[in-house]
Image (cartoon, rainbow, N blue to C red; front, side, top):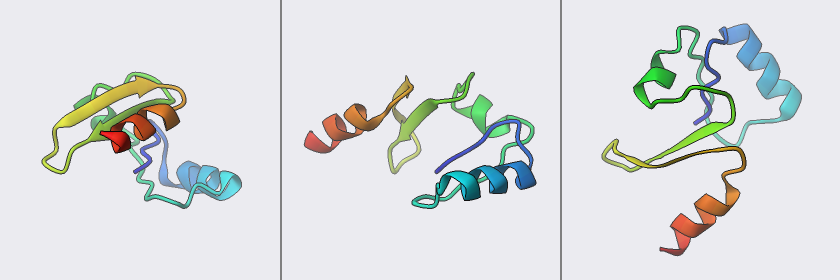
Length: 73
């Protein structure tokens, strides 16, 4: 799920449309509440969450290798 923090719905929709980010759901977080819940402090931060809601891994930048490593486990 994409969560563009401190962004209103219109800005998020424009970003998603321009970049074709449609492979997953995107929800706005204009007040930063979701970011705060998961300890996100800047753009390009990612949080991988288990089915039970616990945080599995956090990182910054390109998450491709972390995802591949987790799949291999």
